[in-house]
Image (cartoon, protein in one colour):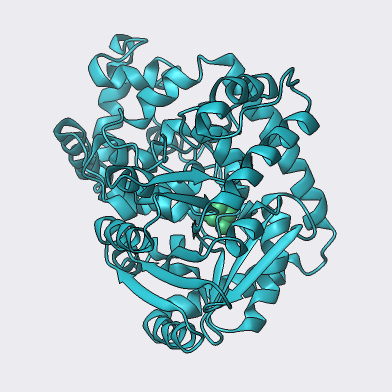
Length: 470
Ligand code: SF4
């Protein structure tokens, strides 16, 4: 069963993207879906005259929280504990998985339902539970499609965005029975019929499962409240019906006060689904009657990201996916090419920071962008994604030939005399410049023309003609 954790061992982004752009069905599905959401987002954002002020408020609340993270996390722990919940701290994926598996085992159950948690995908929780004999069932409709299809999520908000209706019908018909209630006879690919099949399948699952695992969109430090925003209502079933609820949440999801939520309840739905308000907002504080509640606070590289002055702004992210929907690279390459549960522009800056840039894939992610800046414009918490991309490119390992080339270029460009000499030499040798560069440099000329080198540089022309007067 797919859990959608880190796709370690995947080739680098350029190879993945080159293969993905050959898939015309994928490109069609992605273009249709991203353009629809993009249009809806643009029109509801335009309705708010104070959108820019809201954006600034969101940015400042998040920055303030991140600067005082330790204080607010301790306040949250105190509030959750006072309300009857249990708080666990997990430094990395392994520790988080061990804590969750231990909590599930203590209940004596071997199945769990899951909702709204990218953090559990990030740590590979489903696979870790499977190793302990525990089956995890996704209950978010798109996550269910991904899990039944033994697939990987490819979008933050719509993990099955790369699938169309007829593909979903096939997956339901072939796989639902082996996961529980089978798909109805004669299932069509009408959205209503597909939704009904999922509803019946999931309802049976909700009513028979005693342990649930969730994420959260926000955690409020002053009250110890967790907040989940969703569209389907499945989350509410998942959060309330089981006897034990375990929430695994990244430590950056914190907000200091209940009032801060007001800003994000406007920013998030408009940016993600293009709605004025999300259909379901669930909040819970500590343990409710008849239910045990555990909160697992996940670091997994986040404090390391926080230590980077430029890169830390990625922790403001509220996972709305607006940056994915406007990104020309994501639209063509799709989410799988990023090899991470966080695809698109935010994945290109968050994943290499969380995982480090040792693997070829992670080192290639800061280059998975044209730096057009559309992501920055769309981001509701004003994360300057291009700035972080460039910062990370500076930190990535570069091939020796490239380093030598850059050093030579720096030597030439640092001196006007050397630059003028190089330009004169270039002018004299211009006849010998080939149309296509050799070796690794051909990656540049395969898709671009080499500009003509002028016989005389502007600087020399200026000197010779005294600024065009002779
Ligand atoms: S980076 Fe900004 S636009 Fe992208 S998912 Fe995060 S909050 Fe949304």
